[in-house]
Each structure stands twice: as structure tokens, then as C-alpha cells.
Image (cartoon, rainbow, N blue to C red; front, side, top):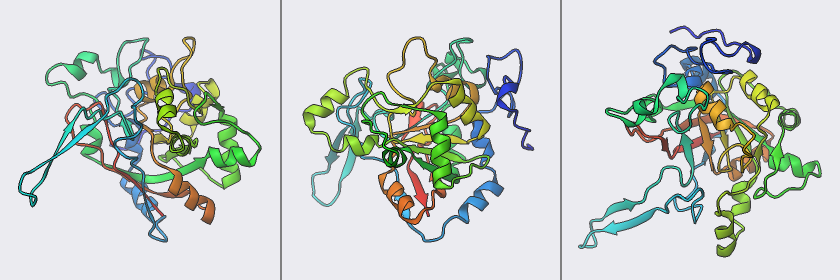
Length: 318
């Protein structure tokens, strides 16, 4: 299938019978990849040329963190079995794929206007039998690879005298993201994986046990992008393949009742995967050192039929 011409923000929805702002149908009525379709062989090959010094940065955080998990999710339990001492197996219990570093699939968050998910998929399509539409397996079977660009908002903000706690509801505006990109010399390209560092994991790692329990109280508070028309325009006009952050939702939290979640826009309306709680600190430090904020990015989600989310098993290679 030839790549369709991507409409500008003001031309959405693609089909006037679809929800306001939706890109449904851009890649066909049965599509389950969304903007991952932009990761064409040509773009992946070009991204691979970004590997210059062979440094690899693993972005999965520990499966046990955060502890306690946020949003009342269960904490993973791990047991090693085997009696002889020379043969062991793993048993995992309460393995919630959204309790640590994760991709949110398109079956995670729906559109409240049409009560459907990306590309018009219904809840029955997701949870019924066979119940596989918009499952994580669609991404796992093709893999995710391409050019990633990091905007280190945390480092930039501190350099500008902007003081905030990543564990508080600090808003990151689209204009600030543009300023970070300009300061870092980052130029977006169609199909980029957009990575944003807020400093949340760095902050969390400094907390003691009591402070971590407070951080997990519902609703949690953390810095993230603003839910505004300017943010939506910024993200769509960049034509990113996916968005990633080190915080637990990409967007600022909690979400006031009067505001529309970016999860709805990104996942349900546009088909843009959201990566959360990616461990970005080592990558960010290296980018600050060499001044190069682009890298080759790979991710192999779990090939789970109908899965709602997955650890990303993500690598950044420079």
C-alpha cells in the first residue's frame, strides 16, 4: 500500500462521519498499526545509519518498579522453582503489563464520542471471542524500529531557571517543546519516535519507601505535556510514529474533569502508540555529552494475542 498523503491538523477528521479530529481510514478500514505505518523500510534503513559509536541504551525499567504500582495495579510476584539446584524455572504472578515500562496499545483507551477505539473498533471486538482487534500482537508481529529523537525537557528547563518537581502536576507546553528542539538542534522528520524526558524516573529513584507509597496514591501527580489544542497540533503536524516519556502517562496528571485526555487523541483518534515509564536517564546523559539527540530505536513488544499493553523491550542505539 502506497503511503497516503498525511492531512494537516485542520483537515481532520479524514472522514466527516468519524469523530472530530480522527485519522480513521487513513491506512484503510482494517488497519491496526496506526502511525506505525510510517516506519517504512526506507525510513528504518535511514535510521540505522544513525548508529555511529555503537552505544546501546536499554530503556526498560525494573519490572518491580514503581513499587507500589500506580493506578491501583498489582505488584508483580516472582518465584524461582526447581529442587536440584541445577535446574530452575520462573513463575510470575500478578504480571500487569502496565505496572512498569510499557506500551499502551490501541485497545487501552477509547473515544468517548463514538464509544469505540482506534479505527472504529468496539469493546466487543476487543474483549469478545476471538477478541483480537487492536491487540498488541499487531505491533509485535512487525516490530518497531526507526529514528527516535529525544527532547530532554528536564535538562533544558533547569538550564532556563524553570524549577519544578517531576512528581508534581507541572505542565509542559508545546511552545516549550519547540524551544527544547531548537536548543538541541533537533529537526523532526515524518515517522519519528518522539521521546520526552521529564525527569520522573530520576526523581522516583530518590524516594524512600514512605515517599513511594505517597507517590502511588490515587490519583498520582506528575509532570507531563499540556492537554491543549497547541499540543495536539504540535504532535500531529510532526507526524510522529509514536510518543514516549519517562513519566507514567506522557501527559500531565491528574486530568481535570473538564479536559479531554491526550490518551484519547493519541490512541483512539490517531493511532499513535504511547510509551510510558521508559528509563531515559543514561540516554539523556549521553546525548548531553555528545550533543546528538537522535538515535536508532527498536522495540519488540510481547506477541500476545489481544494484549492491551506490553513491556517495550526497547533499545536506543547511537
